[in-house]
Image 1 (cartoon, helix red, strand yellow):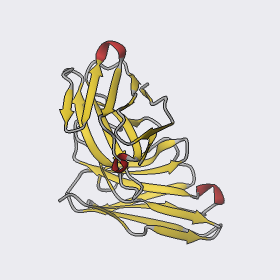
Image 2 (cartoon, rainbow over the protein chains, first blue to last red):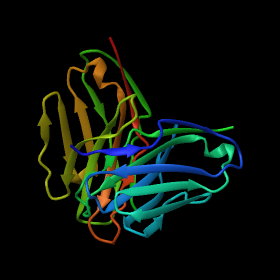
Image 3 (cartoon, each protein chain N blue to C red):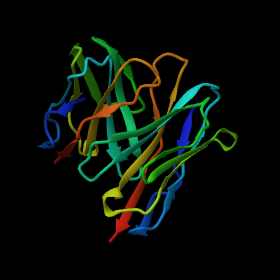
Image 4 (tube, rainbow over the protein chains, first blue to last red):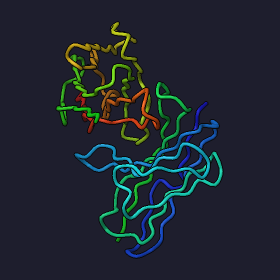
Length: 113
Length: 116
């Protein structure tokens, strides 16, 4: 069965810390995505990767970076966490191709204090 | 540019009622794919259905049905005889076929609350 695993379900960090959110998929998918979900705003794409070491900025990349050193792992990095980055973060993956659905992880609820 | 609009932010129904979730999209492409996802309280979005732009047949899966009308750029989702387990946030999404990276465009979601 398809599985996208996010390293933490809940995370609490302090302002200014460097925060790593990890996502692993076991389906050999080419595409991986990071979204944040906020009430009333739906899903907003932060970054997208279509291959190892390849990345594209999404709609809201400011304050974030990503790393994809291996095909199965896509990391989201908050360089210096701020309170406005408190949110639910969702990772997804999909096979290459526009007709393919995305598979999502359970999400990480991140609080920045 | 593409856009997906889910005008209903929240819908509240009583169990066994039928409910329709609206999805209206905008795209200049002639070929594209539309999706519906369900996000239960546990958080994980689950894929429900995919429809390509050339297939306007309606689809029924148990209590779920989807109505795709290209003429009105709509892809609406109906739950018949709703149940408490249907309570979730539902997202409609559109994905291009051409243009490179196939990044999907999501609507803002509709929160469905089914009361017992």
